[in-house]
Length: 160
Image 1 (tube, rainbow, N blue to C red):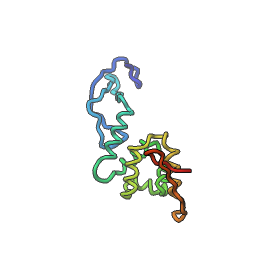
Image 2: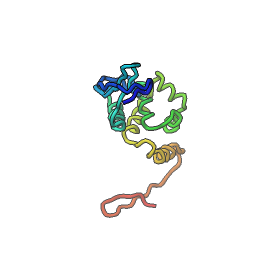
Image 3: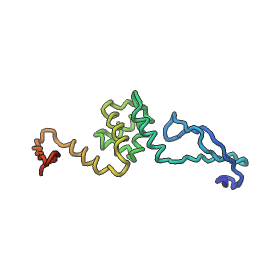
Image 4: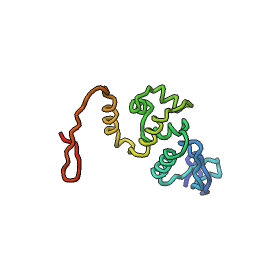
């Protein structure tokens, strides 16, 4: 392997515990690291990145206690949402999202919703469905709607 900084072709493979920058307080144990003996540059090899993200999202979402600001930011980013997206989907201002991610307290209901979204939605693929669901919920609560259901065999469905 060639060093990206100095061009040395004699990089050495080692294994180290490496902090995971996307989620402070997380350490990747015994991962492959290539180090340059000439300049000290190193490259960390993180295999199965999608699986790593999935495990981290599940772990953060299921942890007891309140989410920390970095965990809120991590879950938002894992969904592929901007701060403005999260604000729009949760019915809050972008400033509120900024406060959540920079030391403020996220309300319990919003926190539960973020945990559910992070574990149940696929990034990008579910945006349209989420947008439709949340926009319907934002309608005037005084609007009356007749819900019609029909049973076909042993399955219920919404009737037109």
